[in-house]
Image 1 (cartoon, rainbow, N blue to C red):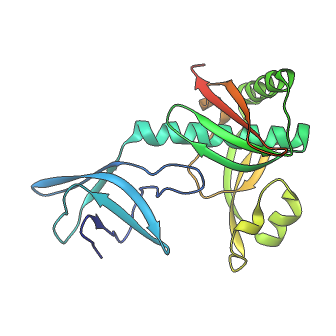
Image 2 (cartoon, one colour):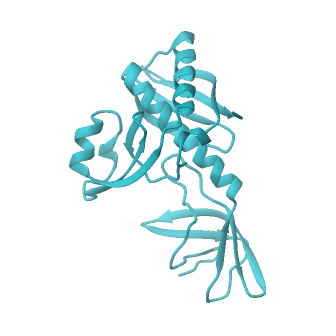
Length: 214
């Protein structure tokens, strides 16, 4: 399948934007040519690779911009870590998030964090990173997931028809359904530095943070 500016492949390693994680970029190459992958979207379960030129029919080789992907992996895994810690300490669940290559933001509710709270969240996140927790990815029955997470995640946003869920478990710090890309160990994250906190309405606080070198 193809459109005026996109192609659909029979298999792909490119990540389509979703769950707060941006899309992958990279290239598709074939004998005698190459196309840049500018954006990747998902429409009704079909992944579309938006390109600057359409490849001919036949086999292509996809190459992901690894620096961009790895940055998203670091921020996505760190977001799970931070969300899990905030849930355990403050009983505030994550109600929104957005990742970038150089920062991330997470919305918590109910929350009204003080400067001391932010310092604690940063310190606890870095403590967990230094503990080098293994990151596991596996499938679990929806009923089991629901019984384990309680109000930690907005599970009701996932269609009820999906009975098996992809779960991310970050050591003992977080357990949550997620379709994004992640690291193998928290030691790869770096160091969390909280940049700011903003109120986003009644009982909702947004924390923006960046990742610094180890």
